[in-house]
Length: 268
Image (cartoon, rainbow, N blue to C red; front, side, top):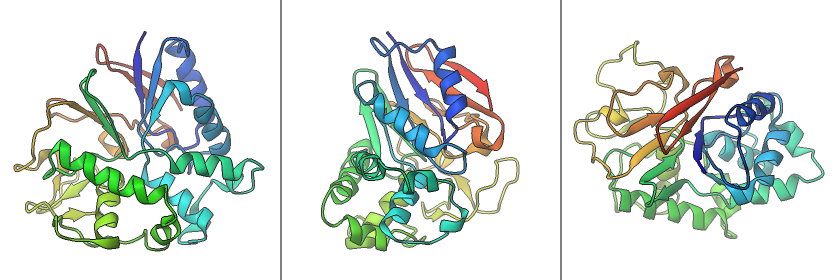
């Protein structure tokens, strides 16, 4: 019996199947954690989403920015729709079933027994675990409610960039979503920089990877995240593990076994 956390799949169905074969995934015993970005940019978003949905009894999924993008486009927010590769979902006969399933997924998965927490981009460095879980629930409640269309209409934007616990409404929800699904760099005061996507070897003045912020609140559980492929899964911070090894860019797809911290990869 084992638990495997898998990096950003992004519609790469064939590598996912090969990875599951390589780790000898046994649905009768094993559990899979997916760190978000199940769809988009890869060639087989619908097949990928169907497979993961079919494994629902054996998986935990968190939402990534590309998953939110799919939900927004499907709702009718056509921002950057021409750059997307999930048309196969939008025209699928089981479209609504797949989209409704995706709406039920959380932003954070926390397992106190295994002492791991999973999210797509990371946990905002000035949040405690309790704050992060509470903020995630705020968004999840809206995703699953009749306010969903309103959220999709106002999803996109980089502001506000700095957390203030007193902010309300769409500004609060957008900050929470951006933190969990788009965060990479921030400034020394904790403000998010959502424009720079470059690797750590290309330093930018005044910008700090979120996990290196001096004031970051250290969490008790170990943290797993994806999203930042240019890290190449290398984070030199205790108890923080990156999972996105850039499958959709032709590199590899990675699974991380929680029980012994062993990685497994297949080429893409």
